[in-house]
Image (cartoon, rainbow, N blue to C red; front, side, top):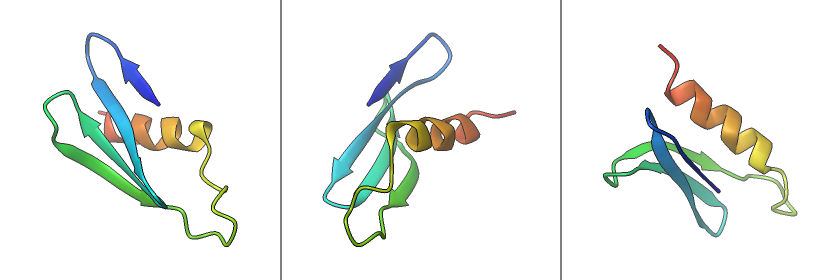
Length: 57
């Protein structure tokens, strides 16, 4: 789950139910928690939308 381009280099790190968006320097940009019972609610599409929000001007 990563996106690397010239302007914004980031990756999602998953730790159980927690997803952490970090940039190429290791700075935490966003945190998301999957609070569903089955642990399958957060999809790659949702993570990409959340990441895009971090880079909006």
